[in-house]
Length: 354
Image (tube, rainbow, N blue to C red; front, side, top):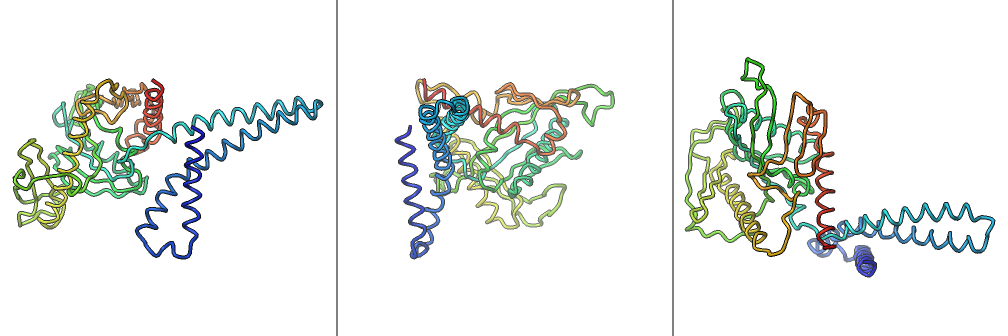
């Protein structure tokens, strides 16, 4: 590991030296690539340098203990402090050296669908849409609606949207799966607790050029858009639905003003779905690999329960329960996502040792 870390530090110093050259910005694209690589290496290098400093402090404490026996207690304390630091930093470095998910820095396409539970499931789907909207706003990310169909009572049949921002996929990828709610529905006058579900799918946003899509495989349908709450109703057929005939995948976009823009967004959605389908197929073919317990979640797997009467949210993949459900529904998701990220990293470290 130390050899690899030394190579990373050398590469970082090389990039740093290059960025100080007078002609560095002569090629803006090359400069941007170089700066991006330097930013990605910086956390590893900083941690490695702190690790080396801790190891040096350990050596100095041992040396001083031999030279100055009367300072033994003080040196012993200094040694133990530096030892704990070096052990913690060593573990941090192991995590930092894990192979990065190439999609982590991508924007995400999120799809929410009402599931079991009729109108209450649609109302819960709306709650999830609101929750992710507030989380995106707190992160400074941009949310763009693609397709939004609501019920008469304000629930959501389906909501498709893009979240654009640094590291959006790395944070949102753990949200894929079935979300279950237990609460007294707004539509229930008897005050009985109901259980209903909604399904969330999270995909890295791909460009249409990233995935091979044959024009003859696509059937395009156009229709009049009617946005959220019946807003921006269009007299022209600008909304677009694409059907990918070989797979049966259907995507739709109605939020843009023009048919061309809606079709472009649909093509990117289709590319993302086809990419994810191929990735899942390849993962299934890898023999001898253990299926991730955290992962990104399969759409038919129950990943989380929101219990309003007991004021708790439980993630079933890692067995974590958080309270203050209202804060969670208002977009305070970081504690849960941090725990899921840590669990996924621990799982990958364990696989690397196996």
